[in-house]
Image (cartoon, rainbow, N blue to C red; front, top):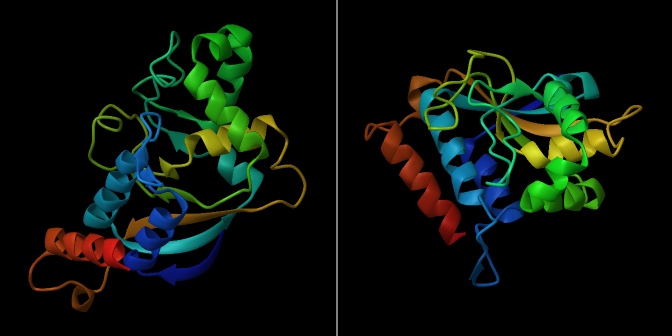
Length: 200
């Protein structure tokens, strides 16, 4: 992993909302979970407070810890509440085979889409964030998924991480200078950023 730059949370959230809107063209899609991912980013800002833009090699991506994933509420659970790495989830997908794809059509459609779609940054945290998908996660630190589960799985399955390919990511890490926080407190800082991003 290579650190490219330290970036403010405003930029992280603005880039996320631009690339992954919850409502597209005025229509809310029931398969769209970008609002959940945005909440994960805000929780990471609250508990960690500093963000880096980083470049990940394939080995880094395979070690990313994925949280509980029910397979988009299909017939088969892909990732248990204790979590698993991208590498282990790929092995599980191979093990489950076609029955998983047929029994979990929403998850399969996302995997198929991201196997061909342009690659975009993923969002990670140096430790789990509060929330139901993370409360039973066994990993306490590392590269923890906040957004990009289907993308990382799809890229590896399609061989798009081979060679010298790097994946851009935003990584939340511990620490922020006291002067960077307002007197109103971290929760109000996050609300302020959300309002600013929505208005820009």
